[in-house]
Length: 478
Image 1: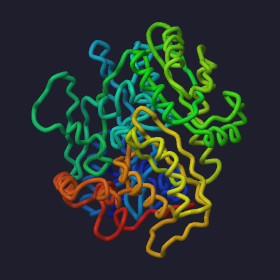
Image 2: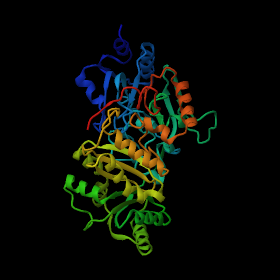
Image 3: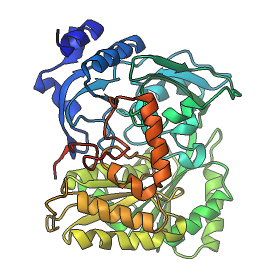
Image 4: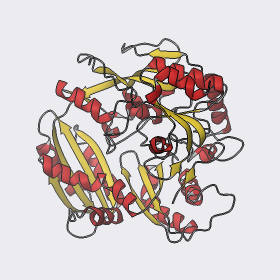
């Protein structure tokens, strides 16, 4: 019997995909930059089936790439060369909501929007949200420790995770879905799984923390003369608003691209260097509180050119559209190199000016669009290649030189090479730039303990000896 035969015995014939027409969507990520070849795609429907799949692959010595909604940005969820892709999209059960404790257990394949629809009628909400909510899965969020738009108020995904159920490489199941608010029994395996990017185990279920649902919202978009002014505004608003939930920023060139792509009019007359979008949420209408705070801040902070406020649902959605349409507008213009980094606030304005020049140093014709989450100094650096860069023969892909230049600059100013998207294969070579040899050795020891034969997502997170990114690099188009 072949491995495929064994897998069919575990999950059923219809859930083992081998036809290229059926596997193609699992083999390329949504950015269109990372792609590879899968031996097959297997879609287990339970924890027991996941365990059976991993045991079968272990016996065959075939590596496994866990995949959720395939919305990752660092190549960590697509195959390279003949691995089995294990899709969690059938693991969608949502358990009974514990309204008193504010908790619920969900299958790893549950999307963010599905969870939101389940708990919001009960007066509760999930603390992580972003534009990919309809396709991003809870398991994927935990695997990458995703951030999103609400980190300012709730923290990242790791702060939302109370317990996990996961299958180790040998098929054994680790289940820590207990809901006790105080439990100091042994090592924090739940925390270890958060951000492990499928290299330690396959997540099958997650118990998440829920928050009170704030149905009353108010949004303001500020046009500013500089990023420094945006930071000063944010600091002043944080001290005045207990309801502040989001603080997103973008720049003039990004706004112009969004307006060009969507046909939207400019939200504020004139062109301004920086824009800050803030949202408040509460059980009572926060609009008056926001307006009062904005009035005070306008008197205190120089560099505020104009402010527009969205008080009702349609106007709030229109203002958010200018921020959330950045990703689709950039992708419509080409296939970008996407780099998610964090910069200390003290260096943020200088970094926003320097990064386009850093990129042009290796690709003179490149176009760099930057936006992100201001409170965390989290920049999404999107580079549309100009085609004029010099690619060395030993560079594994076209975006290598841009990635190398940007990440080295970021580390040089004390920043992080990955703020919320993970390391994946795209940044594994640069892990040693950001982490000491002792830290990397500790990570390797953990990986070896959980996956001694290296069958779970090989080449993701940790660099390997035989080349950047973990063996053969996934092909990168554009």
